[in-house]
Length: 322
Image (tube, rainbow, N blue to C red; front, side, top):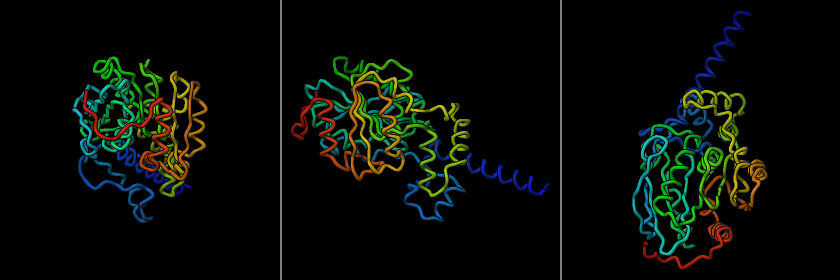
């Protein structure tokens, strides 16, 4: 019996140690080392190594900028949840809207350049930001959208000062959408419409989906990872539930989702959609996963956005900045 208790205690200690290491790798921003591949791309042996050693997710620099898409832009910044938040502002002549783009987990603003270019083609000005620890923004950790909600609010306030006469539209991909939803819960946001692409429903579910992608049962490791991640970040991750925050939206919403999304199953995406109590539209992308839907099917994406914003696609030649 004593040997059993000692073995159980050691096993418990080992599992918690692994969860502690995993939580650190998922929320700390490193600036060196090789980036851990997506779980779906790892071999069984590599998955075991990642489970034992933890993940390494170094800050991803912006490899491209709007000029890659023949777009004129300006660098700007505002104070955010950790430090200065780096931005690209792409002005569009005679535009009445500015769309503020928020990227996904361990990504950067450059990963949304295709979306920015398409939005610009519709006649919108665009603001693209790097969340703390991503791209050009300083930061040593990510909170997966929890404290990034303040960056959402501050981005809106920044554009209210910079372009007070333009309508403000929010667009968020995955974690970016979750940050928008938490901001909706916390702050009176002065925006006109919201576009959400592949939003996750709860932090616990999205962590569990990562373990499923590695072929590992999510219970109890997902719960332990959220617990230790909460200790590291200073908030209760079990209460981070964007699906509940959706009830507080008061402006029209467009929700886009991939049919084969393994990070956020379609049934959960629809559950979040059902919680939205205002004017809303859901557009399903057949055969798409947790990926850029604008890249997967640019025509369908553009059609959905233009209909939602009441705009028609214009010539894709660069406009004169204004």
